[in-house]
Image 1 (cartoon, rainbow, N blue to C red):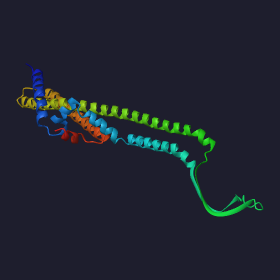
Image 2: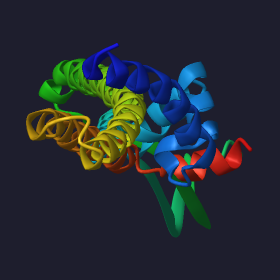
Image 3: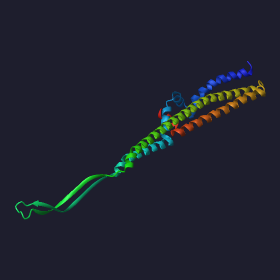
Image 4: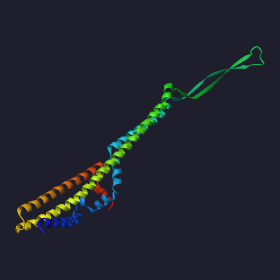
Length: 253
């Protein structure tokens, strides 16, 4: 068995052990078994989508426009009452009435006076013809504005849902790649320590050590790259949904 096969076997063995070690011992959220379980079952995805839709400033703006359109529609429906008035009046004075005096031929009519009061009550409506014609069009316009705002909200909700899914899938992928790169880094580190000992015993040359060291350095760069990608995905998802993933994980414990 030459030195290359020897260290390849070491990498294969330590890759399996390294992955178990990372899952068991790492304290960060990236390797938390609870997070791994939650991501594998996708149980947090509906909660994240709902939170993002409530948190979105664009959705809140559209909801406000719906309320505004609904209020305007009510005003248009009630505008007809602006021309409706309640009228009343009271009159008090002397009332003259003529009474026929049958017994007195020389005075065929006798006039009598009485003090009386009169009440007048009624409803008045003064409505321009254009207002009557345009009223149904104004109401229809208000209803259309509400429908447009509702459609806009539906589009916004759909877009937010798609964005949460995209960020969530990026988080899952980066976490998995980080696990793999972590085990590769640990294996490469062990491999490098082994070849260092062999070099001190003059069993390998400098070129062979340099090759293993290059593999080890690349594994470290790969791990840091995927770690950064995972952290970025996590922060983007938290910022977009308005809720911390770590907070959700505490709630499902």
